[in-house]
Length: 313
Ligand SMILES: [Ca+2]
Image 1: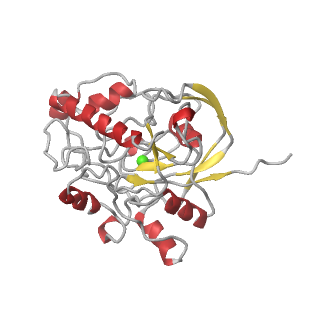
Image 2 (image 1 turned 180 degrees about the vertical axis):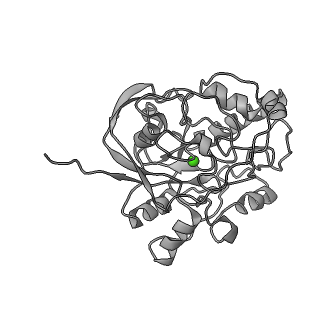
Image 3 (image 1 turned 90 degrees about the horizontal axis):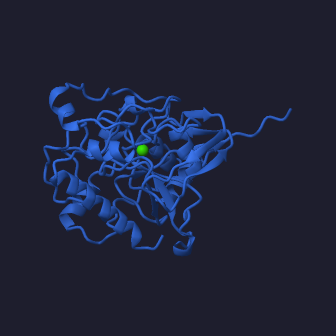
């Protein structure tokens, strides 16, 4: 992908998002339409249904992995024509049940194996200093009130360093997508049920995103309980059947390999794919973004994965 296309894509999506808001369409519509889940009326949902706040539970042990039996699944192409749908086979592997937390990353820094997150970067160079400062405040490292939130504002290289410290690696994009879809090709990580705001930490009425900064609260965006990141595993109704949390939302997640898709003529392979969307956007989980490895943002994080050696008969 060309250097400017990342910004263009995000701005385009931001404009689309805001356009839909202006038309009175909520984030719920955007997500449910694009994930091809059954349509529902999010505004009615927001007005008439009392939904309890996210359940704040301590996550499983940091670094806990979920083992996924390998198989063949159908790679998605929705909203991403650069990666045509095609069958793909992944070997058995393990993937982090949660995004890597701030506390877990701090252990790596203390051990001298990881560097301090680089912080928020305005890749578009289009944000005001006030907006940059506001978004930089959402970087979690060093915040004692966000120990169980995902580490963010880390580069691809820093994510790789952390996973190596844990004897793991970043997931491939195919593994990440397999974890989300399963061999049954689920329309969403959690299955067939439509999206609602309690299934993922996306941009809500309180969030500040680079697309709308300074932020103007919108009544069409129902609160999900968190203005920025949430403790990992807060949105359990968005889990996969295997119990993998937050594949949609909270932070975008770095992956390894396959940066170019079908756009090889336009892609020099120097960027890396991010998946899943984050707290400052309203993206469907299928959307992929390619980003230079040195870039970091307050909605960028990661989880680790691990190959499983085949059992010899
Ligand atoms: Ca995520």
